[in-house]
Picture 1 (tube, rainbow, N blue to C red):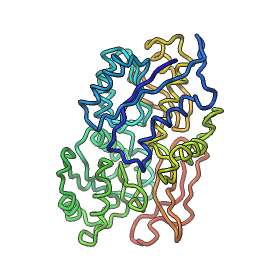
Picture 2: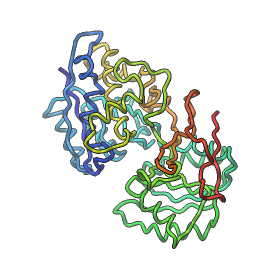
Picture 3: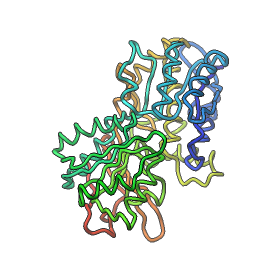
Picture 4: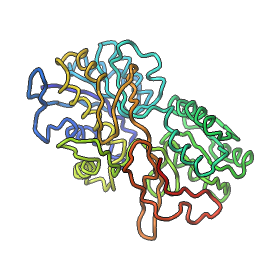
Length: 396
């Protein structure tokens, strides 16, 4: 039997399904499918999962990864949620020469000072590429000006650095750029957004490079009658959920109905099948569908099992070598790592939440890599706001 460990953070609300990551990972390692993992050097093996709640505390993150390796003697480790917590986990796993596969951290800085060979592998699209597809789409529809509100966190700074280059390539004009510190939750978003409106009353794009916990507040203030700011398009790195995200455009790591045509596996079959498994496991939460917050950790478990099946032995070195040679499609997108451990094969998709008279729809608008992807848009966006930009169905 193999043992794998990770940390979960309790700040993530259960209605996003993150409290069930450990149960979903049991699907990822296929123990519910054939009860075993067969390798070229032995087997069949099962994987037992060890999970701790780090309570979004980096001190606990460090403590628990030490405990997983030293006391629990796990064979392999999976990453926690968030770039800052993943950095702490990497420091521990590097100390013990353990591989770390992580799925909820996208800060480019995690890969900036990689050792050779790296034992750290992230399956998300990196932060610097977050806005590439979104800005290409909006530029193609006539957008010229961008007003930016951005956190100075590591992740949003990585997104910002990538956006600057994309704006230059697309000849987008950054007409305002206001920063704030996310630490401590002290930012006054009413004042910040009021400043943006005064600087740029009618931008084509309002780009909010914010953290997940800040998204709802920013949307509420932007749409409030007292502010009454109406950019043609609102783009957010971390949009809020459900009705709160109505009309917001957001780059997304994953959507459950995206068809990845090259993915072939008898267990998951497709992202839609994964969604069915997920909803069956989390039925008591009343969720509508799975999100990238559950699919990412599940696929990290899948990547681990696939690498084990290709590894020459159970050693950390042979496992990292197998991971370094990874090149396949998953329900989360294509997976292929560069020398730093970044996934360089996966591009972002674009979503926008819409609703008709009776239903709310979260729609895929445009993708980079999926030639057969569909758009569920059959009417102009921003239906009730005639003065704002309309995104047409378009694919490159």
